[in-house]
Length: 484
Image (tube, rainbow, N blue to C red; front, side):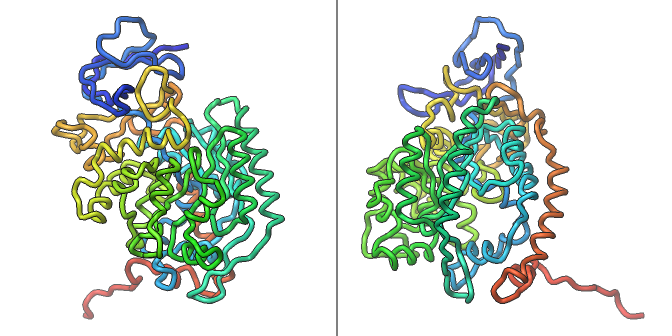
């Protein structure tokens, strides 16, 4: 196994296991051999195949993204940024997914674009939630990312025949077929020769699955010793549907089924019983999440576009909730989501101390690893996986270098990420992805979006075009000069 030695590094974000927190190490060394970190400290005196001068660098652990839809979301660039539906309490989710459909064979191009964006922002571990499509395993393997594939299944799907109401089309037989196929794929990934691919059991939405399949799928995850993830408490619409069906909040419903706890990752869990958008009769949801040590994938970007925020990150953390960060949608940039998580928590709480830069960085690294039941990810420590990113401290947006993480998260973001390693293999060099064709995939993505939009009038219940559902930012007009 080849050994790589980063020598005399200006700053290393190292893991202090005794204090269970990241710390700065200045002028230290980091060494990895093969896929594992073998030394973090001062004055390494061993030999190495490659020695890299760490001057002008900050080494950070590879970021852990525990909730994303990388294949589909890039197709909505230019469509979803301002798209919200007042009748659905501002979320545009249901209207979009009922009116727009991406041809499955095009999804691999969306994934390739997103995987590049993620790598360039320092992400090394990714939970990819999707309904399986042709070429998925191939593009995951080629990416070089550490992938946690979450093949989705539902026993019903959303349906709209009027603006203000969400309905459901039941198909339990299909849901069970897809559940069986998901488990087959997950089991196959465990044996993938890359060693970087694994699975997560993922019924997609709480309101779109029967209680029986939720319980059975949670048991299947426990049997395999892998996480289980589900979208829950992500909208007022969903909250009201669950109250109408069960007389309780989505979180209380899941608690009653016995599916909360270690290894459960809830996507979003923002619209809880005491959130100001809901104000239900109870105030127990966050306590239930914390007491059970359930993980929440906090993805601020899609919700802040609708005007919704978690209320709030610091409160969840204090309650004992395992907090991780996800990108969910584009831009797939976990550093920006960490910044948004911190700022929105302060806004929601009227407290500038509600979420520190350290808090959100912990969530984007060790918090995500804890959610995934992995103590070898999200940290630079002996025995951990050699997943790391090199921050260029000479980048103008990082200067002056007083506090590298503050500079990275609040100023430079992905622009200062220079190199990325996963499993000891370099996948980004000088801000260029080495494993995938970002430009080529982006060009195919544009073609796929046009095909998706052309089918909207045939899918939308009102027969509207994509431009009617989501108008352009400005009117298209012919501007003429003064008449002669």
